[in-house]
Length: 442
Image (cartoon, one colour):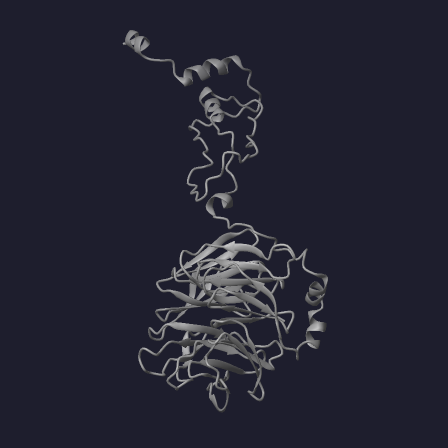
């Protein structure tokens, strides 16, 4: 048997280790090596890539700790250490996330000095301009190839404007840049985009659309950081006024959900029928949500406007508006307890935002015989003006107190879809059109 073993067996690593170990002196504090086999560490294991890095990308060499002095390293362990790849694992964000193309700068370095001074002294100069209204288009912005559904100014970077389009892109505009006004083009949606909102926590935008999802994007790095999937077309999103870690979304199946942006989970869900949600708005204290729905298919005015309790997830009133019209837009007053609803009955109705949320039957903003009907509206910074976009391509300015029409600007040949008031300069507004145009008026 011994002869057969010697003839057909090979010397094992353990035998080699024992022979080499006998030749080396052992220190007094010698610790025997681990008898278990070491597994090779593959830095690319379980890494999913969307955009493989080019071969020219260079990575710094991985730092491998030297063996402890006096510790014996076996032949097998030396072979495993020698098999380590020379290129370490790159930044996971670069592999896991798709980056958007960079067209211009998001910095305000090339914004004119007079505009910067208005940003810095908004509390002082803004008050002096509260009574002024935009009179002319100062900055035309062209990039989108289809209708633009929404525009929104950044509350933290006042020179940046976001626009969402049916061409599946979001444009980030450096509005007053003298070099390149298109700073970023974000194309993370694979269907038309309905709405976009800036977060109050840095350079992040939240968007939603026909791909049944909402997406949070880091504008500075050009990467998608979170996706919120739904079972419906998401038509509107809105951040909580006091907590930007929360936002509400509304969609085509009547789903109204409150999300946590950090973990991508639904905090609350508000269920009331299956009528498509057209718009949502938080009240000033953030304790109620006002939603408007398309009830035209059922010939019923019930649930056209519903006021929800945010924490208890129950409707406080579902018969706020009892007329047989759909309201595509609801907006709360800047600081007074009122909100308005833009009705397809060719007028804007006024409601109290305090229970029982009564309609003001004696005051409304009439269309004054215009050829189109109102689509979206917004209050000025001081709350004294109500500004409305119309299907005839015009922008209408109403006096909030008297409800009289004080100015009209013919902005587009096609419908004016959305309007946004600048957060720092009260006499500057942005608007967008069904023909793909984005404009800034001052």
